[in-house]
Image (cartoon, rainbow, N blue to C red):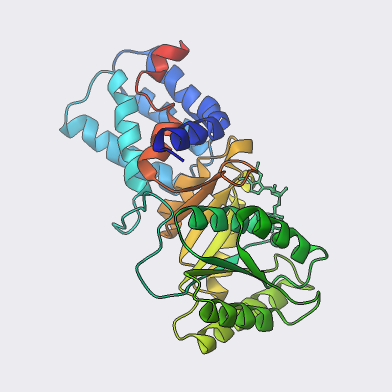
Length: 321
Ligand SMILES: Nc1nc2c(ncn2[C@@H]2O[C@H](COP(=O)(O)OP(=O)(O)OP(=O)(O)O)[C@@H](O)[C@H]2O)c(=O)[nH]1
Ligand SMILES: [Mg+2]
C-alpha cells in the first residue's frame, strides 16, 4: 500500500477519536484568540476526559505551558501545533526508531513473534494481517496455532493463513500449546521461514493457567532456538480504554512484552489511550488495527498517527468551523 493510502485509512480509522477529542480542541482554539491559563485548563480537561490519562495529560500540559512562556507563543492558533508536537513527543518511546513498513530486523532467522492478549482483543485476526504484511514485504511466513483451547480456533487461523497465503502448523484441539509452538518453530527452521508467528489462547480455565501456559510456551521456544521468541507482542483492544493499562501490567509480569498492537481503533473514540499506554508504560506501540480486513493493520508511525488525529492538517479547525 502506498503511504498516502495508508494515511487515508488511518485517518478514516481514527475519525471517531478525532471528532470527539480533537473536535473539542478545535472548538477551544477557535473560542479565543490568545492562549491564557483558562484555555490551558480546559485543554487539560479535554485530554483527561478523552482517555489520554491523567499522568500523560500532566506531561503534555507541563511541556506546553513551559513552551508558551519560554518560546512566547500567544495566538491560540499556535496551540494546535504545540499540542501536536507534544503528543508526538510522548509517543516517542525510548528514542526508538519506528519502522516505516513491515520490515523484520536483519537477523535472526526465523524471527519468532509470540502474540498474546486477553480473549477477543483481535489476536488471531491480527496474525492474519501481520502474515499478509510480512508476505507482501517479501518474507516467508509461517503461523503456529498454539491456541488449542477455544473451539474453532484452528479453523479461524487456518482461514487467515489461506487468505494471507502462508503456511500453518496445527494439532488437534486440546493438544499441548507449548508442543504446537515447538513444532511450529521446528517447521519454520526446517523450511527456512523468515518469520514464525505464534497464536496463543486468550482464555483458559483460569487466569493463572493462562499466564503459566504463556511462560511455558516461551521456555519451550527458547529451548528450540536460544533467544526465541524475539518479540512478544501484546494485543490490546482500544475500545476497552483505561483497562488496557491493567492488561499490560498483568501480561508483563508473566512474559516480557516487547511491544504492543492496538486494535479496533476504527470503532472507538478512545484512540487517546494510545498516548496513555506509550507514556505510562514505556512499551512501544508497534502496530495499530484500523478495521477487520487483511490490509487493516499498520506499522505504528507516530507522525502519521498524530496527523491522522488532527485530520492531517493544521487547518482542520478552519475546515470544521
Ligand atoms: N473493527 C475492528 N475489528 C477488529 C480489529 N481487529 C480485530 N477485530 C475483530 O475482533 C473480533 C475478535 O478477533 P479475534 O482475532 O478472534 O480475537 P482473539 O484475540 O484471537 O480472540 P480469542 O481467540 O477468543 O482470544 C473479530 O470479530 C475481529 O474481526 C480491528 O482492528 N478493527
Ligand atoms: Mg484467537
